[in-house]
Image (cartoon, rainbow, N blue to C red; front, top):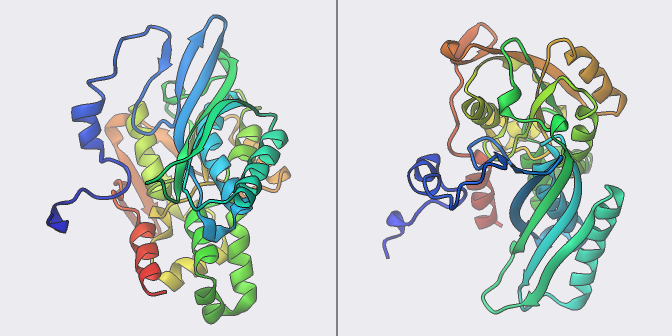
Length: 348
């Protein structure tokens, strides 16, 4: 087969979803409060006086990270998607389709890390499946469904956003890109800036979660919606949020905090940090009356954050101001991390 005709790797593009997936969603259910849509990481189902937020993802394990660290990351990828609903994460259902070469010691190390994180956040394993199968390979070693439960009044979503609301961003851009690069290619960091630089960048790995950010944010009634800036980073996340909610945004890029080690990493590898994958960066839209208090609460917990923009009428579009330049905020469509990681892997 001609390689040029193969589909792109990664998430299916939005046009395919709009044409093929979204028109075919099975039976209608009036109890679905939030169903599948771009820019929303979870679905929500009403059950009596309660509602549950649900999200399903691959269980992602990269042995080169070390099985304990890889499992920490895999757990947080799964649960961050329901934490942003504003409901409290509570249960895990997990299917482990393990590579034949994964031995019992590695499986035990991986599962111990999942268990410890689940205990830390009060999450119970509800059900699952565990087996080795031919044809299964890293990093996708199965799939998992995260569940969060709460009252409907505590649910956040794009339908709650109002004009004049403020945009607050935690940790800044390219958290995931930096953490993964430092763990995967330590020798390049050491060569560029020494072991201290590599260690500082590697420590960013454990910022790749919004679980603690969301725990702070859900204490504020004025928080309208939250989103984890994963694929295509902050720019992609903001674009998707606006599309999901049908509103405009005005963003001051210079107000977005950029951690010095992340700025240095982006310069070293030559990528735009604002378009790069950033699991762990929480984008919050909050009532303007509570923006300052929310930032203060983040700082009290040691979480870097800043107010960086506001919601405007849809007709004003999506604009981003950087220095003296004002331009349209567009979706990056292609995250620079994947091509970069592939290129560096080929050169190993």
